[in-house]
Length: 141
Ligand code: CMP
Image 1 (cartoon, protein in one colour):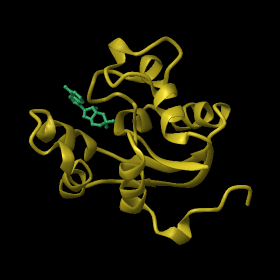
Image 2 (image 1 turned 90 degrees about the vertical axis):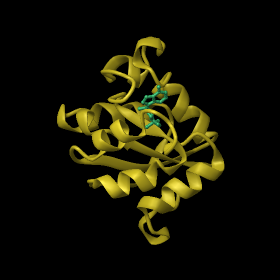
Image 3 (image 1 turned 90 degrees about the horizontal axis):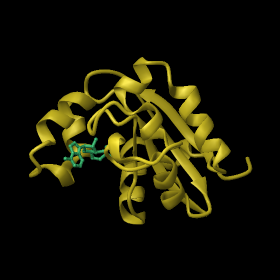
Image 4 (image 1 turned 120 degrees about the horizontal axis):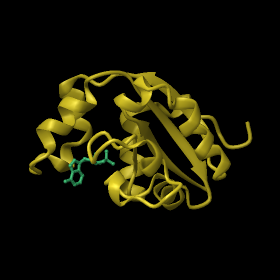
Protein backbone atom coordinates (compact mmCIF):
# COMPACT_ATOMS: atom_id res chain seq x y z
CA UNK A 1 0.00 0.00 0.00
CA UNK A 2 1.27 3.43 -0.92
CA UNK A 3 0.00 6.97 -0.36
CA UNK A 4 0.23 10.05 -2.55
CA UNK A 5 -0.90 13.65 -2.25
CA UNK A 6 -3.35 15.06 -4.76
CA UNK A 7 -4.33 18.70 -5.27
CA UNK A 8 -7.27 19.75 -7.39
CA UNK A 9 -6.12 23.21 -8.52
CA UNK A 10 -8.08 26.50 -8.20
CA UNK A 11 -9.57 26.65 -11.68
CA UNK A 12 -10.82 23.04 -11.54
CA UNK A 13 -12.39 23.67 -8.12
CA UNK A 14 -14.01 26.89 -9.42
CA UNK A 15 -15.42 24.99 -12.40
CA UNK A 16 -17.10 22.46 -10.10
CA UNK A 17 -14.94 19.52 -11.11
CA UNK A 18 -14.13 18.09 -7.66
CA UNK A 19 -16.69 15.29 -7.95
CA UNK A 20 -15.69 14.30 -11.49
CA UNK A 21 -11.99 14.22 -10.61
CA UNK A 22 -12.39 12.32 -7.32
CA UNK A 23 -14.55 9.85 -9.24
CA UNK A 24 -11.59 9.19 -11.58
CA UNK A 25 -9.38 8.45 -8.55
CA UNK A 26 -11.92 6.04 -7.09
CA UNK A 27 -12.58 4.27 -10.38
CA UNK A 28 -8.82 3.77 -10.72
CA UNK A 29 -8.79 1.91 -7.40
CA UNK A 30 -7.37 4.76 -5.33
CA UNK A 31 -9.00 5.23 -1.95
CA UNK A 32 -9.46 8.73 -0.48
CA UNK A 33 -8.08 8.44 3.08
CA UNK A 34 -7.98 12.20 3.86
CA UNK A 35 -9.46 15.25 2.13
CA UNK A 36 -10.05 18.95 2.69
CA UNK A 37 -10.96 22.11 0.81
CA UNK A 38 -8.38 24.73 1.70
CA UNK A 39 -6.58 27.75 0.35
CA UNK A 40 -2.89 28.59 -0.04
CA UNK A 41 -1.70 32.14 0.38
CA UNK A 42 1.30 33.18 -1.73
CA UNK A 43 3.78 32.31 1.02
CA UNK A 44 2.36 28.81 1.60
CA UNK A 45 2.24 28.21 -2.17
CA UNK A 46 5.92 29.17 -2.35
CA UNK A 47 6.72 26.79 0.50
CA UNK A 48 4.84 23.94 -1.18
CA UNK A 49 6.60 24.44 -4.51
CA UNK A 50 10.00 25.28 -2.95
CA UNK A 51 11.80 22.71 -5.16
CA UNK A 52 10.78 24.80 -8.19
CA UNK A 53 11.99 28.15 -6.76
CA UNK A 54 14.66 28.61 -9.43
CA UNK A 55 12.36 27.72 -12.32
CA UNK A 56 11.09 30.55 -14.56
CA UNK A 57 7.47 29.62 -13.87
CA UNK A 58 7.78 29.72 -10.04
CA UNK A 59 6.29 33.18 -9.49
CA UNK A 60 3.41 32.69 -11.90
CA UNK A 61 2.67 29.18 -10.57
CA UNK A 62 2.58 30.28 -6.94
CA UNK A 63 0.43 33.31 -7.86
CA UNK A 64 -1.99 30.98 -9.63
CA UNK A 65 -2.09 28.43 -6.80
CA UNK A 66 -3.11 31.16 -4.38
CA UNK A 67 -6.00 32.52 -6.49
CA UNK A 68 -8.72 30.41 -4.89
CA UNK A 69 -9.68 27.28 -2.95
CA UNK A 70 -7.95 23.99 -3.70
CA UNK A 71 -9.04 20.46 -2.81
CA UNK A 72 -6.28 18.44 -1.20
CA UNK A 73 -6.50 14.72 -0.61
CA UNK A 74 -4.42 11.70 0.29
CA UNK A 75 -4.95 8.76 -2.05
CA UNK A 76 -4.01 5.24 -1.04
CA UNK A 77 -3.58 2.07 -3.04
CA UNK A 78 -1.08 -0.33 -4.61
CA UNK A 79 1.42 1.80 -6.53
CA UNK A 80 -0.69 4.88 -5.77
CA UNK A 81 1.98 7.38 -6.87
CA UNK A 82 2.44 5.92 -10.35
CA UNK A 83 -1.25 5.09 -10.74
CA UNK A 84 -2.23 8.68 -9.93
CA UNK A 85 0.37 10.04 -12.36
CA UNK A 86 -1.01 7.74 -15.03
CA UNK A 87 -4.58 8.93 -14.67
CA UNK A 88 -3.51 12.60 -14.36
CA UNK A 89 -1.64 12.46 -17.68
CA UNK A 90 1.28 14.61 -18.86
CA UNK A 91 1.95 17.94 -17.10
CA UNK A 92 1.01 19.86 -20.26
CA UNK A 93 -2.65 19.08 -21.02
CA UNK A 94 -1.92 19.52 -24.75
CA UNK A 95 0.46 16.55 -24.53
CA UNK A 96 -1.67 14.40 -22.22
CA UNK A 97 -3.24 11.20 -23.47
CA UNK A 98 -6.96 10.94 -24.17
CA UNK A 99 -9.01 9.99 -21.15
CA UNK A 100 -6.61 11.50 -18.61
CA UNK A 101 -7.68 14.16 -16.11
CA UNK A 102 -5.39 16.83 -17.54
CA UNK A 103 -6.43 16.12 -21.12
CA UNK A 104 -10.11 16.33 -20.21
CA UNK A 105 -10.02 19.28 -17.79
CA UNK A 106 -6.64 21.01 -17.94
CA UNK A 107 -6.52 24.45 -19.54
CA UNK A 108 -2.76 25.00 -19.82
CA UNK A 109 0.47 23.79 -18.20
CA UNK A 110 -0.18 25.88 -15.08
CA UNK A 111 -3.93 25.41 -14.76
CA UNK A 112 -3.55 21.70 -15.46
CA UNK A 113 -6.40 20.64 -13.15
CA UNK A 114 -4.38 18.55 -10.70
CA UNK A 115 -1.07 18.10 -8.95
CA UNK A 116 0.17 14.70 -7.78
CA UNK A 117 3.32 13.67 -5.90
CA UNK A 118 6.07 12.38 -8.15
CA UNK A 119 8.01 10.03 -5.83
CA UNK A 120 7.75 8.42 -2.40
CA UNK A 121 9.90 11.00 -0.58
CA UNK A 122 7.97 13.91 -2.06
CA UNK A 123 4.67 12.15 -1.33
CA UNK A 124 5.57 11.84 2.36
CA UNK A 125 6.65 15.49 2.56
CA UNK A 126 3.62 16.77 0.61
CA UNK A 127 1.16 14.73 2.70
CA UNK A 128 2.74 16.10 5.90
CA UNK A 129 2.51 19.64 4.45
CA UNK A 130 -1.30 19.45 4.52
CA UNK A 131 -2.31 16.71 6.96
CA UNK A 132 -1.56 15.57 10.51
CA UNK A 133 -1.25 11.82 10.94
CA UNK A 134 -4.53 11.69 12.91
CA UNK A 135 -6.44 13.24 9.98
CA UNK A 136 -5.61 10.27 7.73
CA UNK A 137 -7.88 7.23 7.94
CA UNK A 138 -6.26 3.83 7.72
CA UNK A 139 -7.29 1.77 4.72
CA UNK A 140 -10.56 -0.13 5.03
CA UNK A 141 -11.86 1.96 7.94
P1 CMP B 1 2.43 20.41 -10.74
O1 CMP B 1 2.20 18.93 -10.75
O2 CMP B 1 1.57 21.24 -9.87
O3 CMP B 1 3.97 20.66 -10.34
C1 CMP B 1 4.66 21.83 -10.73
C2 CMP B 1 3.84 22.66 -11.65
O4 CMP B 1 4.52 23.67 -12.35
C3 CMP B 1 3.26 21.80 -12.75
O5 CMP B 1 2.28 20.93 -12.23
C4 CMP B 1 2.73 22.85 -13.70
O6 CMP B 1 1.41 23.25 -13.42
C5 CMP B 1 3.66 24.05 -13.43
N1 CMP B 1 4.41 24.47 -14.59
C6 CMP B 1 4.30 25.66 -15.18
N2 CMP B 1 5.13 25.76 -16.22
C7 CMP B 1 5.78 24.58 -16.30
C8 CMP B 1 6.76 24.06 -17.17
N3 CMP B 1 7.24 24.78 -18.19
N4 CMP B 1 7.20 22.81 -16.95
C9 CMP B 1 6.74 22.09 -15.91
N5 CMP B 1 5.79 22.53 -15.04
C10 CMP B 1 5.32 23.76 -15.24
